[in-house]
Amino acid sequence: MTYSRRQFGTIALGSIPLASLALYESRLFAADKPNSVFNGVQIGLIIPYSYHGMASDAQSLLDDVVRDNISACESHCEPIEQYAGAGVPAGRGGRAPLTPEQIAAQKAAADAMTKWRLSVPMDKFVELRKMYNDAGVRIYAFKLELTEAMPDEEYDYTFNVAKIVGANIVSMEMPENGDLTNRVGKFATKHKMMVGYHAHLQATPSTWDQAMSQSAYNGINLDIGHYTAAGNHDVVAFIQEHHDRITHVHLKDRKFPENGGQNMPWGQGDTPIKDVLQLMKKEKYKFPATIELEYAPPEGSDSEKEIVRCLAFAKAALA
Image 1 (spheres, rainbow, N blue to C red):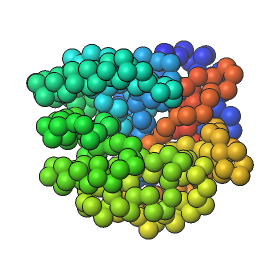
Image 2 (tube, rainbow, N blue to C red):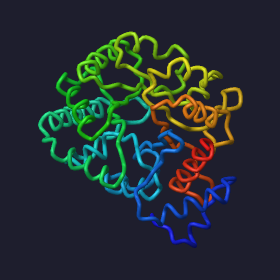
Image 3 (cartoon, rainbow, N blue to C red):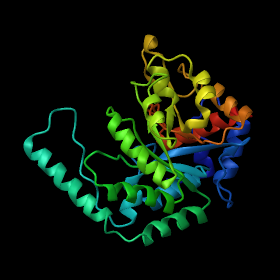
């Protein structure tokens, strides 16, 4: 998606000051590399998830983040592995119980993916890193869901690919099983790379305690929106207490459960995004803050316009 200067002027950015709009207009039509570090805080974006309904291949995503002035990102494994020659992964299924045939198909797909991962050359991953870095974009987190069923070699593959593409974080969802975080933590220690566990509405101040006790390389991918919607009112204090084990934060604006808990356009929910960013600026925390677009774009907008809005919100909050 590209904009003419006239089209850019019609983008609905709500209450973002006109000065910010002018800055983003000049950036979108400039030839220099993107820069989303504001007063020492790296603002990134999780891809391809945030670009809803848009192309999700590695080259298209790179074009998108450069156009939107984003200089760093957390990437799901799919676009990276597809660039290296993997097929499109099989669907994970819905909430309904899977049929035996669906279970068998998923197992076959997982086995085929494991076989591919353990045989693929690393050349294309090296090439992808150069492509992104040459454009001014750093991949700081590589998201791949490690499971109990995976062999040790697939764990090693995950950490090795993360390193090759330039990441210093492997990210995954917080598992219910402490045996899994223990196993992951052993490989994180082996590779000396942090793992950031991402929680949803199960998040409490003690959610990560067991995992962190198992390995110094087990850390917290704190989603401040989900943490708020889970009913926690202490996100700033939580960050202050655990900043040394936070790998990165996810930025979104959700309401407290007593107010409905829903995702909102930034500035309309209960999540203290500005306070968190100001804390990161003041304390000079080095972990990145990752935009994760989850609210539905309003009429006349789309995910890319809302990402630009969120980036402008973050910049203004860090002024």
